Image 1 (cartoon, rainbow, N blue to C red):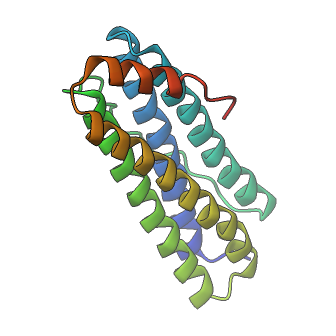
Image 2 (image 1 turned 30 degrees about the horizontal axis):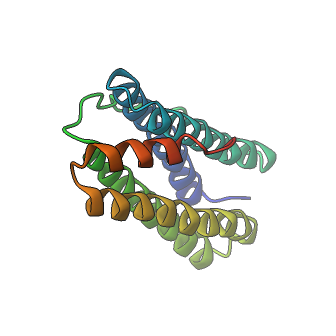
Length: 164
């Protein structure tokens, strides 16, 4: 049995993952409207990936006979000052998700919720990958700043992303 404390944390994490999905969708729409089609594709795929993360927790909770609460989502920002601002926002978002996963892991450890520990282990590893990807894009965008040719090259590179 998963305790109420862990269930509450997992339900909040579902909300956080779906909020991330929604936020990435907002970023994607901004890029599409500003002709950064490669970044739009990358961000749309990231939105889909975050949705799947939320569903993974839903499925875990249902498998453990827990009550899933679908909590209200925040509105997504759809206007940004630059491509760099978008990916800086994405990096901060990923760092916040990592902090939340760490907190769930600690709670699960303290309460000896071993199945939750195992499930959160996957998320810990995934967050390292996601933070690294966002950080690498931010570094590239910081290097090129407002150089149109370099921005177009980064946009082209982002468009090479395969399925999420």
